[in-house]
Amino acid sequence: MDDLVIARSLFGTTMAFHIIFATLGVGIPLMILFAELLYQKTKDRDYAVMAKRWTKGLAVLLGVAIPSGTIAGVQLSLLWPGFMEVIGKVMSLPFQIEIYAFFIEALFMSIYVYAADRISPAMRILSVTLIAIGASASAILITNVHAFEGTPAGFRIENGEIVDVDPWVAFFNPSFFVTAGHVVLSAFMTGAFVLASIAAYHMLRTKHHERVYRFHRKALMLSLTVGGIFSLLTALNGHESAQLLHKYQPEKLAAAEGLFETQSHAPLAIGGYTDRETESVKWAIEIPWALSFLAGNSFDTVVRGLNDFPKEWWPPLFVHTLFNAMVGIGFLLILLSIIGFGWNKIMKRPTFPHWLMWCFIAAGPLSVLGIEFGWIFACTGRQPWVIYRMMKTENAVTQTGNLATLFVLFVAVYIILSIAVVLVLRYYFRRHPVANDLEEKPNEGSLQM
Image 1: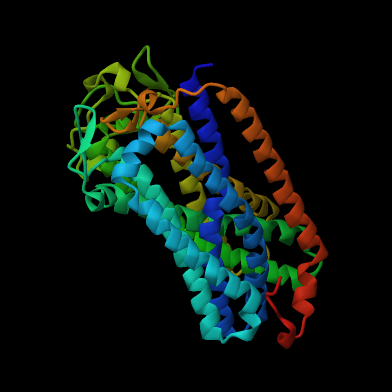
Image 2 (image 1 turned 60 degrees about the horizontal axis):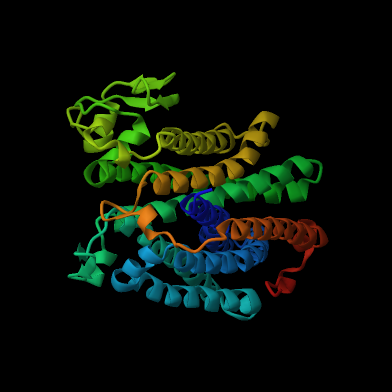
């Protein structure tokens, strides 16, 4: 295999693995914060138990997120030296500031885990708030490098030399705010739905244990509410992302929708697959004029098609399928949240039907898949550029050989880590069932490890 293909496969596998833990590391702290706030407001100990147990799970996940993130950073330097040369001279600010964000998250995570039972309620909430802020800031700062790849700013390449460098212009590149918003909102959404899946699964298993069932029911409703809100906000932010693509990366938007000819009143293609030979999207459902409105808030917005660009600039056309899968999962999660809220709060039903419970269980894995599809779409849709219109991916890759061996070794490491995480979480929560936490006296509650 070509070194470029292997390098992309290796780094892509690393990011696909890391992004699961990084996303949950951003989303779950917000859920812990909401549980703490509800506990302080209602004095319902169920919410304190939620916060305690979610924190234990978060600690395990962070134990994998941190080393896998380190691996990703090392691979950036080893696999993409041409890219890192630009980053080192132009875009090093996010990496430098991210150290402080991680320091804040780690510091207050330690305080919350080991001293939560010895500090005031206000300090507990402050600690979790700063954990959430630190985690979100880390995600934003690292993702800003990705935003820079799509909308580079703050430098020029002249005769092969990097000139006119302005780090702050590069930092606040045109897609900074939209990309930052999308990564944080989608992480909050995913964290909530993963916890909803866990709660729904345990509701099915403990339906004859009324006290435990009620606890998981509260966790499910909290998770569905938070997940529904942030899935809706993610969809709204996605509209802004499409407008950003229309302005700065038009061929990526065209590939996402399988649009070959430039036109106004462009249709939105839902489903199907892009056929290069016929230059059409087969088996798609088309919504007339919707793509033009999505791109520019007007039905007569002119959307550029792929045929306006050299074919060597075209992204892989399968990104249409990735884009549809990402958007489809997002709307399904919104629908599930609405149904769950309506069934519980409006119809006042004490239990959920079996089929709906299994839908809730599927929501967590689907949200993680949505994150994966979105990340692959964002990176693959930018090809063949590693820095859009400035540096091709093939010009940034390392010339060192033997990458296939590294690929196999790292895949083995990720498989082992995945199994270890599942076993550790399973072992801990089996030895510490929720019934034991619920039976503790109020003054015995502790978040100590």
